[in-house]
Image (cartoon, rainbow, N blue to C red):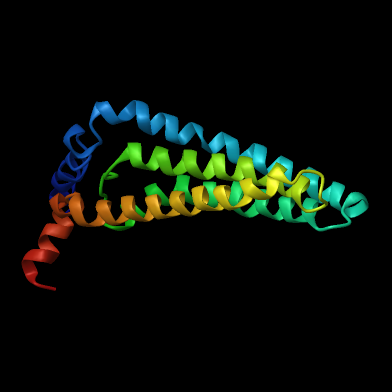
Length: 180
């Protein structure tokens, strides 16, 4: 392949990133709200660290250390996976646009509210400071499981219902045409 032919293919590769391949503008607001939720996971990391430090001296029943682990795993890691995973998984599956940004926002909100309800209730329920906190723990678990299920449904919808945009790229079209 000569240099001149490669120079002609560059504009074709750039064309695959036109506006019609991007998400519609009506989803921009919802997507921005979903990505702002990423800021919450930093707060959860700080809360997990502070609770972990407090658990060394003050935890006699396991409530503070359990709340620290929950803030770290669900509040930080799971929210980060949902925020990054929606982009990475869709990109690995052929540059697909997210099926429903509103569903993703719902998943992030459910996970955040579930974790925000569970962490203080673990601190209060395990040592026996508040009996009402035991009734909140199962509800927060249902919120968090619903959030992860919503994320999974959204990813399946992205893989099945959204068109693949990488097929329009010249290299992929040549490979698909050659039957490799």
